Every structure is written in C-alpha cells, then in structure tokens.
Image (spheres, helix red, strand yellow):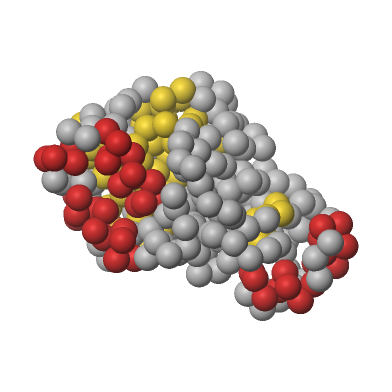
Length: 271
C-alpha cells in the first residue's frame, strides 16, 4: 500500500484529511491516512528499509540488509550475492567505508517508503555509529540548540531514559533507552492518528497529530494504551516501553513538521 510514489504532496493532503470530520468517523480511512503520513517523506538517503502495511495486499519491496558490527560493503555484497556497485548506487553511499550499525541498506530495486523507520528491520536502530565503535549503549549528548519554531508547542519528554541514538537523515528520530514497562508519554497535546502494529519494523506504534503541522511517533512499545481518534494531553501515559521489532528495549521517537523529520532534541526541553 505504501510505495515510493508517496510524495510530500500526499503527506500534506493526508495531514489535511485528518481534520475532516468524515475521516474521523472512518477507522479504515484513518488508518490509511496515518500510514501515509508515516511514509510521507520519501527516503532521500536510501538508508531506510521499506515500510509495508501488514494489513494490505502489499507490493514487491526491495531486499534489505541491516548493518552489523564488523560489516563492510564487500562482506555484505558477497554474503547476499549482490555486487558492491549496486549497493553503493541504491543507497547513495558517498563513503562506503563509513557504515552505521543499525542502518538498513537496500540490496535490490523495489518499492520503498520511509517511515520513521528502519532500524534493524525498518526501525530497530541500535546507536548510529561507525561499525568499528566498541559499544552500542553510549549516551548521546542532549545539548542541542532549540529550533526557531520550538516554542509553537509546549513540549515534554516522552520517556525518562538516556538518548542512545541521535537524529540523522537515516534514523529520522532518536532512541531513548529504558526498561520494559516504563511509561511512554505524549510529548504534547494532540489527537491519536494511529495506534497499532501494521507497519513492519516499528512494532507497536502510536502516531499523534499536534497543532501547527507537527506529528510525533512512538515506536517499539510493549503495550498501547490509547486508540485512534483519542485526544491526549502532554504527559499522558499512552504506552509502555518495549522492544517489539527492536534489538533491545527502547523508544524510537520522531517529530515531523509539515511532513519533514526534524531533530526531536531541538524541540524537547532541557533536562
């Protein structure tokens, strides 16, 4: 259902539809809109795996491979029967010697849409780092200059753990570590657009629509506590932390403004 022809204009049209009362009454249309919003920003870096709605018939998607410690382009190519040139071309890799653990590479042509996603298998993102780094649990600096429009919404942290994955064009969000069952809270007032596990690689996922063109996403939860169409307040518990479709317990959190992924640390308050 979600293919690479989903464009920014589709995203904006989907965002407009969410305020349509008729859409609010249609759970099927709401699901379609939410998943379209997830895939709204077509993958420019080629570093994310395809995202497929598991509730649809689906179309052929690209083969992918999640980078592991010690991997090289040559090793990946030989193990998967793909030539190195194809991997470099499909993923637009400027420096083949600098790979990111948890980054998802395309190995073949096929439908591709970007969600907040990918991480080992769309979104299982251990900390983004060179593959020769020694640990995947080091803390990421939370000191980031606020965005110019950060004050448009009153923001709060969705979880209390340490940030173990920073924002990049590949990750499109941050990862926050924690323990299974830790509370996941709404980062701002808004309305739940999607609550379910129909997007491969993101596990149990919640998407919340906010004012001023903002959307937040919360992935890999153990338990979902809200439903689509439900109004939530900043700080309200909406899920419990888990590791569905992830390599460890974590929250993958994204902020999107008018469909474009932005660094959550530029919006979240200092702590």
